[in-house]
Image 1: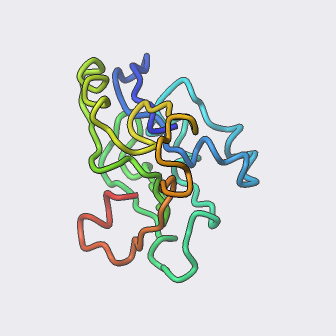
Image 2: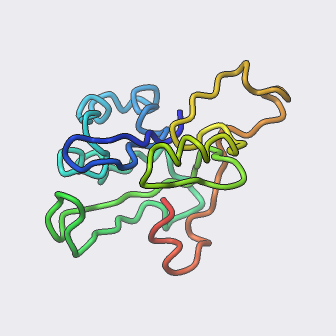
Length: 157
């Protein structure tokens, strides 16, 4: 359920897509979901249309900044300069107390034994794994994108 961390053939070990990409079909975004190339990272050129789309169901109506688009003026992976667009969301899946990220898949597996959320890197948490019950556990939460300061607003999407 969490961000898949996978050795993609074209770019090596890299994060895949978020939980929201997996949910697109359930959010009446069938065409967007069907256009995603799951054999490569969501950050690759073949997925640039999906990456630059912003389904408004993922925006809080009271946060006008969330609908903004960030355009990188430099190249990113295989995406040419000025063509990498990022859209934001006001919602996030609960990764737990911390978010582990490593360029070593074995290290990521070791670190994930310490994770205490639902949607951490490469997680496969089932309802049976939630020992304190689902009524006491956050799966998704809302965050005010517009209240983040400066650089944090640009990178936390």
